[in-house]
Image 1 (cartoon, rainbow over the protein chains, first blue to last red):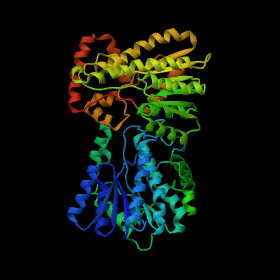
Image 2 (cartoon, chains in turn blue, green):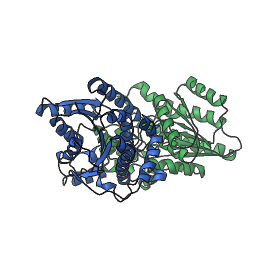
Image 3 (spheres, rainbow over the protein chains, first blue to last red):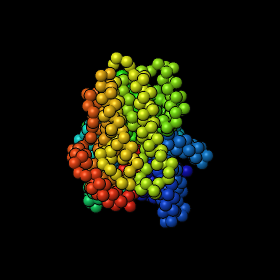
Length: 286
Length: 269
């Protein structure tokens, strides 16, 4: 039984991806923040496909203790039902903020959810992924181009610009994928980033101010429905032989920023490991 | 530089803690939320090369404060700065609130703030400059029907700070009062800013800038900091327009906003 974990699976791109993957017979474990939305999403998927194998885990990935807790719950589930094997992890949960806001640890929220949560969850689930030479997929964005990581102030406390914080977090996603491939491609693991394009979701309308809200409401009208990008995730998951690319849009490889180098990826790994108090090195040795 | 921050696990407290740690200051953090304190301590230590000590404490309880002071005494910690962030707010009409909850606002915002300020002034580095920050509010500038207790408690801090500043001027102690508008410290506040429409957005101050400028100004010997041009204009009008008129206008505005949601600048216990 091939099991796939999707974060942010109760709405938008995550929900459509879960729908397609369950249709293809995958066992999908969704993670989402609100219990209500989890229930609705589960019913939604089951109503059109009663045989779908779908379960939800509730967690607020903004808080690291929640990431760790849900990772442990998922590992228990995998050990019980899937021989401890995880076929793919889709780090899709993300947010947009209008203001500098922090998590309990005092980390900037877009950086914390869009990047650190996936970084930590992947670390926890890596042993399960290694068992079946699985893959990790991040939800990226073409907005990662034309920006660099602000290494000296990665939380952007000086002159916080919400859009800069978002773009930087999306650049981190692709740097993370690059770093994973550098480290684990030899062990059979591949990491990808999907550019969903402009999609009609509510990401810019959740917990944002009136300006971001307004702009996003206008902008998303021109977007495609979330089932379009969902196909790219499914495409990557269904490959028998792992594809070698890094960045995909509409099931095709796409060029990415020149900032995506092994050097920057290593730097991000070092920083993120410190911020999560983990060491990927340890997993490598197992 | 040793800094004590109260209400350190809340949104503004965390912003101050990040700001201080990025400047290399050592921190003593307190909050009623022990788990939140552990989290912010972890986050700071992973980001910055500073010493962070924490003690969970209910500042409204004298015994709890004594316990914290015992720790400070034991390690003979002496401070250069005190940031009084801990505070509390409940929205609504005076008679619509629970009696003890109303009293609690004054107990924390005023009585507890005096208690900790007195104690930490006694434990400052003698002969060195010392800075105190009181986190008041833009609400302290006006009579505020439907936020009467909160606004008055913040007014208390504003007035108290001016006098204390005078008393301690010759002892190299600076006292700064921070009077911010709304700040987005929690997810819930976003809703209340939206509910206030134009004024909500316009009077909202960026948290990270307020934290940085407050420390700058406290060290530079300033006495009052009202962040944001519009807020400074509003506070100016607060001084020249008869207070009964302001009360009438504010009452109308809050009544409308509170129909949609509750709270302006939220509890930072």
